[in-house]
Image (cartoon, rainbow, N blue to C red; front, side, top):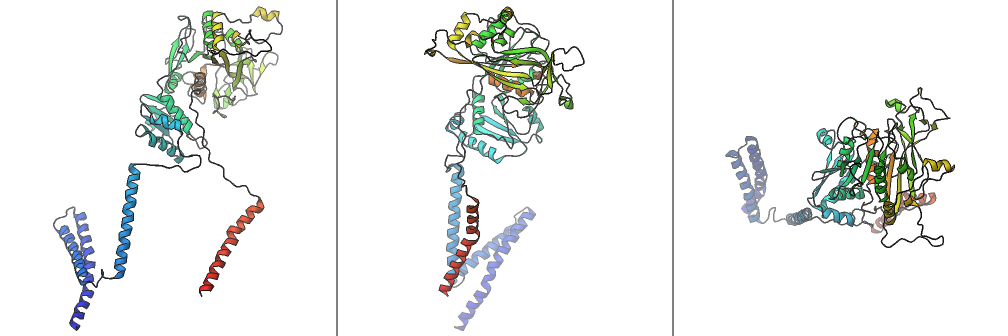
Length: 569
């Protein structure tokens, strides 16, 4: 009996060394194999010896029935370890399936993190892959989450990339990045500037979705540049508009020259006609062709420089615009601080219009500009665009230095350099204007009538068939169109070398976008705002809530704990 106890004591005393020796041998073998770069023969022998010691310990311990495996604590620990490993394996499988088959559930009240149905339809039906390039120094989490939502819906047809322009200047040069935060869309061979993001202006769903819809559209808006009267050429060269044409191409426009002397009318596919700085007069037939184009719902951008007379007065007067034969002088000295002379007005005041809505207090400048005068015309909506400062004036004798304000002949600022106009017309009146010339007021008529009324084209007069007691009724087949016009008393600001300065290019591009009605076809997506659930409380209520959370509730908890302790005691 004593011998058996002695043997068991020996087993309990020396078996445990096999358990300690096993990991030591295995670690030695692994270390030797890693250091030597070879697993034969010593590292392999050590690993096998360590594994053998571990196996021998398990066999002896199991055979004895009284050692480590026989203890109740070991069995409980083994069960706990098995349960833990099972839970980890289940969680791993769940995560694997979630990665392969992504399912997101938006539990917010108004689906704050779910894209609108219009967006989902457009993104799922992309005909060509679309990539969003964000040229920013850091990654904004809100923008990234929005772009990731698009990517999840589209599969492999939508992608995005954040690029630091300082780290990849060559790539930024290819996209002609001007500022940090510029965002571009790319689809096939098309590239299009989308928006400039900043801490105040982030990427929004409505902006991104409309940009994708435009760049995926097969139809490209066409802009015709009038030629033949000394206008700026659309090809590269001194005083050309090649930079403007390139920018229009990046915004999915097609630019072509137009010679109305060779054609009887403006092409029917013209979305916008641009008259950029004519130096010679237009023929009467060309002016009539432009009038007809406007009466059919066309859009016209007119940019006229000083010391020129393109004979467009009859057209502009119908819209209530007069281009003064005066040079705008800026005496504020602001432009001189940045190297501009007094004959280059620096503009920082803009009207409330889609063309200038994002300009804030940015600058644009116009070397050699003419001031405009507008008067109300029935049926025409007028919005000022470019406004000079109070220390400017319209000089009537710019060729007689020194330039000094003369209250008898000059006009004191602020002055108007640009204006946007729109007019609703109907298809019936458009047909009437086509069959019948539009009457205009002649100088003789002005002399006979000392108080002339504003010149109104036939298309803006009320219908003659309507009686005073009966409002005019539209015919069933009558369609309402809108003619648009932008008039700027300068064209040099959009030429090569000045186009990319300050906001000059934005004035030109935004004018073309508005005239071409690019924003009119925008997809309307109502912004999702989080529900305001804040509670407005008085000072007394706030003080009471503070005492409850800091003093009363903790004291109640401590008191309850003390009572329970006393009862159990």
